[in-house]
Length: 443
View 1 (cartoon, helix red, strand yellow):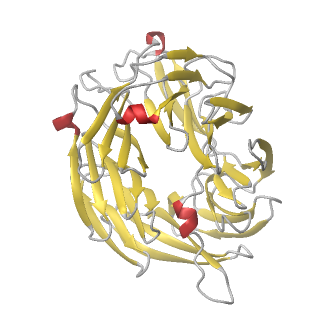
View 2 (cartoon, one colour):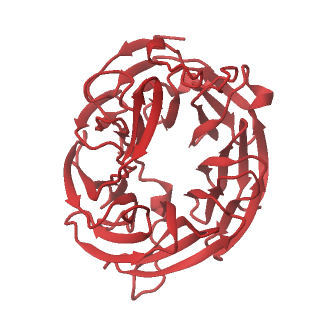
View 3 (cartoon, one colour):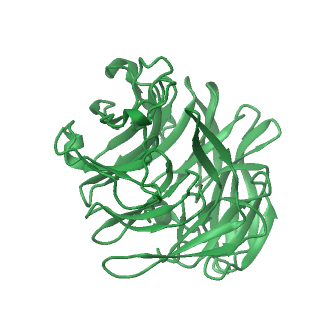
């Protein structure tokens, strides 16, 4: 391990965004008269689960229709959803083992089909027309959407020593690497988390297995699971040769050199505290967005700790350049108006320590946080809030390169409706019931 430094840095909280492939796939124009955009969400309705398409007038914000793309009794615990880099496919997961726990939709034909993997799937990342799926019991699958086949099955039991527990988060880089975070140890302590494993998407080969230094034993809990930094969010930046990792239990972030990680070693690894009062172990950074400019990458990351907070981070210089006082539990922002605005509802996920345990609660707010991004070589954020008629949970951009329209999932106790709102003014353009309880939304 090279150059390991500890810096209890500035007060901070983190969020990140990349105006990337899905934005390019963006709004779908279906006629000359009306410019429409399509968003997609997973939902449950009684014992059934499914995927729905919402079509919005990208100019007026009027919600024109909601269409079922796939619905089934077998897709019983709908969860995460991602759109492929090429824009042609959607993949959603259902949190159960075995039959029908993946749903794949071809957006060109609007045809959906149920697929299955043996283990319970969780996180999804994308690489071209392929989906990389993390699952229970140390499994990772590569699904080729064009052939509807699993092309690679990676099993941590066969390649990791000591064994791991479960993949928490996945990111990909253009060189065909899937970067996976392994957060917690097992309940016995035998299977080790607090590591980053890199997998070659084409071959299924393990490229590197890097364990994070466990430098704050005073922050560890007695349950044997919470015994390290517990990395979760992975944000690689090839442009700046920087990897940013969120550390859940230590409540900070880590920077390191991306090229060295490909070679199986840490280089210039530093830990940085994100709590608003400078204390380790209280911030719990939970949502982040990578935001790209021509010459640099930035990260916006938000805390789930009781003190809340959010941060704006310069990856080239590896500095936390701004911090904001916010409630706990801001969601990953939607980026609109060609990157001029970051828009985040307050889903209110809150984590805290209580007599040696980690507890969690959710208190969503009827507020929308809007961050204006200044133009220029070193963009900075200016924060303001908008009032909403009800609590909001997640946000998706309607026409990210054209205007400030955002689609919110909302509702008093659960996300059961959709609200189209303008981030500049707070004007609500439309509000309609959803087809069920919304779990995730994408565009």
